[in-house]
Amino acid sequence: MKLNIAVLSGDGIGPEVTDQAIKVLKAIALEFDHTFLFKEAPVGAIAIDQHNNPLPDPTLDLCKSSDAILFGAIGHPKYDNNPNAKVRPEQGLLKLRKELGLYANIRPVKAYETLLDKSPLKRDIINGTDISIYRELTGGIYFGKKYLSEDGNSASDLCEYSREEIERISHLAFKAAQSRKKKVTLVDKANVLETSRLWRKVVTELAIDYPDVELDFLFVDNAAMQMILNPKQFDVILTENLFGDVISDEASVIGGSIGLLASASVGDKYAMFEPIHGSYPQATSKGIANPIASILSAAMLLEHFGLYDEAELIKKGVDKSLKLEITTPDLNTKNDNVTTSKVGDFIADFISNPNDTNINFANIHLGQSTII
Ligand code: IPM
Ligand code: MG
Image 1 (cartoon, rainbow, N blue to C red):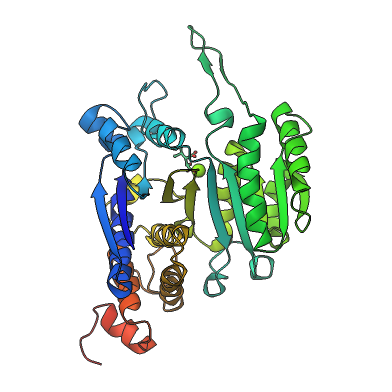
Image 2 (image 1 turned 90 degrees about the vertical axis):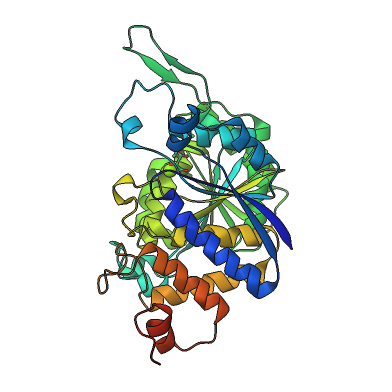
């Protein structure tokens, strides 16, 4: 298969983790005889520095003419700490989502067997957790009308949803549930918000088309609690934009590190793949950023194009790196000199030598020894 992939690695640790995803995709291309072509373009704070625009037109054009987009991270402290900044890196990502119609953000959350003790949550609570979060991505309070009074003392953000916006992501969530544990939980705040009541109504009506899928509802405050009390009760979580943002960061604690959580943002025409973590500016260029979320996002990209064996091999490589503790310091207490790039090298090497022994992996592929 030939794929043109736009690479928008962005700010902070974005470029270094995206480099590892590219490395792994190149190894896949070689093993499975695919052609993946990568073209880079600026987005976020770096694009503001260079072009005074967090999403320059050529970047958007590149995305529109590519088969898929690999995204890194955006954000910079100089904007976070300045509420008066008119142009912000995040606007680049939001505009990209909107312009490309990426209305469904899919965030898989699972507890890895080998990492059960890395989570601050008890092993018995998280063991076996496997959740797929479907977060609406182009509507709600993120995109509603914003207002700041002239004296700067009052402000508002409008939350709006239409039936159509709710329906299109809900269909995807129900279809996903059909090939999983056949359960959709709608997370909302229908006891208070009108938009949430619309979500309940529309989703309840639509559920009739999926009689094999069980539908239940949770208020978001309760869902936040249930997520850490009993995450195994969830299969597919369907929710609106802001609740999905919050719940998915919370859910990342189950996996042991936010550095593990990948995501796909899809619409009717375009698809973008990105780790859920941010730009982690304090870690930039230190080699400590966990590239696994980015690498798993690359696996989601392959799945999107039906390349399931290829994606599976990447996931096996990730499992192996976790098992052998060839991981960055967020997960690795034994060996703190495994860098971002080494994790990428290891997983790429695994793809080329999936049947090699663990000893060889621990020694050769880490570059610690040349003697078998
Ligand atoms: C995410 C991020 C973004 C969001 C930010 C960077 C705008 O937190 O993808 O979860 O809030 O959607
Ligand atoms: Mg977020």
